[in-house]
Length: 274
Image 1 (cartoon, rainbow, N blue to C red):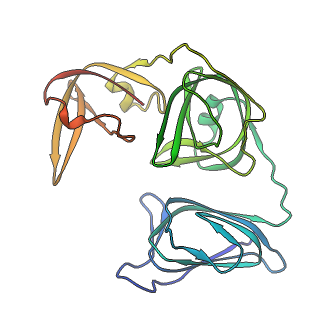
Image 2: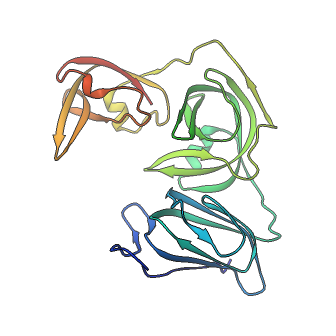
Image 3: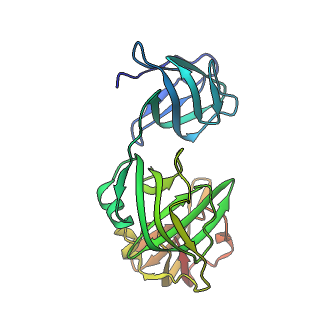
């Protein structure tokens, strides 16, 4: 659509602004990011999908709320006050009519949308909430629909553990280290959803180390039985693994709900997680 983005050179510190190609992202330590619409057009929204957003970043016009800018301008200059890592920049031109793509199921979503995609209208049918966690201001809600699962990240409404969800919801799809999740956009709400609370507990899928290595059950609740726990030192870090024969999977306590350091090296355990 003719949107122009200009990154300045650094204005302070030792680090140059750069693009990382191994896991594509823009890292800006200082200086400015200028976003400009084509001549004669104005922007109403600029959304930054970020890994980190500098708390002292500011815009020369409009309103900046964390990583979302709103206003009415042909050009916006963002001054970077603190290290900022950006995955995508989505610009909405003033007067733009947003259309949503209908997605009939979680399974269809995972099969057909392998990159970050905005403006999806996802249909859920008897999706079971299998795990809920609030961590550092982010609400991570995982749902299983049939044999497919997805994370719903901070959508802005309550989805209790074990509840059943049916209906449609407008969301954006994003990826973090290759793992998909859904996040809110301006149209996200629960008006077209039925969320029925349930006392029936979500059951984990019995899986193996080989299943995890084959990338089965991503975002799903699994239980892996009779595996050997091992601690492996790498430099100044201690990493934790489970072994089944020669095959191994690293354990990562993302939500800090367990203390892996207290487990006994070489012992056999049953592990449950996502």
